[in-house]
Amino acid sequence: MGSLTRRVALLASLWVAVGLGFAGWFVSGLAERHIEQAADARLSTMLDAVVAAAAVDAAGRPRLDRPLPDPEFERPLSGRYWQVTGPGGVATSRSLWDSGLPPPAGTGEGGMVARDAPGPRGENLRLLERRVEIPDAAGPLFVQVGVSREATEQEVARLHRGLALAFVLLGAGLVGGLAAQVVWAMRPLRAAQRALAAVRAGERDRLALVAPAEIAPLVEEVDALIAQNRATVERARAHVGNLAHALKTPVAVLRNALDQPDPQVRIARAQSLEIERIVQHHLARARSAALAGAAAASASPLAAAEEVAAALRRLRAEEGIGIAVQGDAGLRVRADRQDLIEMIGNLMENACKWAAARVEVRVHPSGRSVAVAVEDDGPGLPPEQAEAALDRGVRLDEARPGAGLGLAIAADLAALHGGRLTLGRGAGLGGTLAMLELPAAEQGADGGLRRSWRRAGPAPAPSAG
Image (cartoon, rainbow, N blue to C red):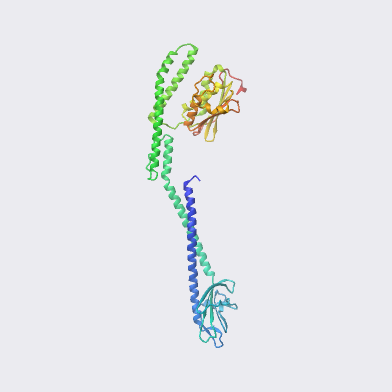
């Protein structure tokens, strides 16, 4: 379960349900007993009235010597009944009509028994009975009074419904209030999350939040970590700037020395110009980082691949290697354009170095990332050497030109931008497949499929693409 609010709400619902269920059971039982006791008290008053009026006639038969004040005893099958049982016979209320109450339980003298019994209509009766001694009687009289439990049961049912509704509303209010309290209490954390996202996007340089005492140390530690990371990055960029400054003058001297009309010298001069462009780029990045810090950026992998392909076609015109670039022009990644060109350029240059006649570059979406697949038709890379090829300075073939830094630099840059670089064997051309995956940025509105095919030498037949 990912949401703390939902977790607290569910746990609170469980505990509230258990607690209110127990409380409802206790209160309901207590109120039900009170209702039963109140009903028994009213019934006991009726029993006292019947006992007070009980007598025997000259023949010893039980009777009442005066009428009772409750008219329900006179209405047939009204639900209120009395019965007096003695040695001379049985006297009943008019409400019993031609029925009678169950035989008395035979209590001791002065004792009273309360029990439930069936009535003349099959209804459930609450029955009270007492054994009394009166003058002129041949033996004890057993006086019984019964009242239908229907009214009591209805009152208990109303009590249960009212309590259930009240406790449900109370439980919902408690759970809702607790959930609202948790949501309100989590506001500082959500504010910290938004501030951290703004820091990551380059919109602010620290959290700078006024936080409650419980999370204030966390905010301070995060700010300290941001400051430490920024200082580390600034030191690294300062070193890059110093290196670029150190190379700037020798590169300029080299470019001036190569200002000759010879074709080979012109190629060397073009490379020196490219070195100078890279030095100037890193100088600019170091200066901008020192002034403003890192900022969010996005770039098109397809445009970068086509730019690199155009440069490689010129540089490797004599080798006759065909370079195909295809993909969705609307796909963009969260990376600096020059860094993206450097990553893709290293991969494509490595592919051209090992290719026999063909290099293919494909740009396509991959979940929340954008994948750039660079594949050649060369001998391929054995699986056991794939990881070693990404190590800095490793050259798997000393006969080939290079310093063994291209793939390592591309892997480092991919990791810095939240992506990754993997090597394997391609299924299409059969050579090495370099898969560069970078986090996707927002897709542009003019996205569409673009494809370009061009051989570094003379243009091939259309079927070659």
